[in-house]
Length: 336
Image: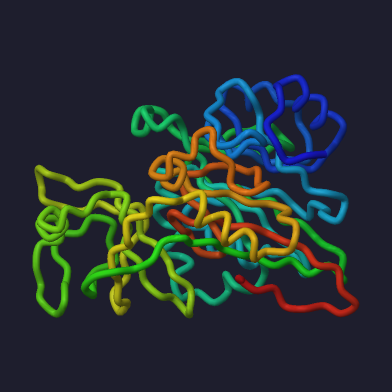
């Protein structure tokens, strides 16, 4: 079974047959799917077999083969997020979907920041979304396929067991590169007034405007050797604020990203270095929009285009993926 967009009837039949899957589709289609071994979220953007695609009449199924055995599917309120890490399988992987723009999505980065328990077992997933023009008008949702129950402000997690000789590994692809002066933040916040830029405190909004920087250029920082993006949601002209999708953190040095003109080429080069099959992957809607990826292929990859990506942490403008390797001995999973 391929990871791809299916007509509604095809998706219904496959889920009726009992396949285990991660599902993305318009809410009207998710409502018509049968109960089964799956979790899903609202999403109309995909990397399909023929390239980047917008669709409200097809269903994307990420098939999980027989090595994945569902341990439990559980939803978590804001105050329960830390218990996700207590519910990890003894040996396996957990798939998480959170409605974007929800309070639980806002809370999630604060729960995982500096909490080493999140790293005890692979956790991968995405933030559900809606048509870009409907952001703020229509609420993204997640759905538990076992009961066909929708949730608008809960994290939904499918904890899966794996055979002991199957080693899951999470990887990330971030094609963005930092450039320019060092930017430091004094608050954990998603609405920024002032920042320290090259040692001088100043209004961040005015700095970005004077630098002709746009929302396609996130702030980038190094976290344990990995470049992590903080994407800009809005430059608030009225209040002279910079609003970001995920919080900024004191104690880290950030820079703006370089402008990227060749998204496909950069992703192609990164994908060539991965010589394992991706069992699951998703890529960011900002990459889709700013890279003009509609109708364009990225290697042989098919997957969800999302409002945020999770590889333990909540990420922006990043591709995340899961690979499996069967070995004689067990190994600890890592972020590549």
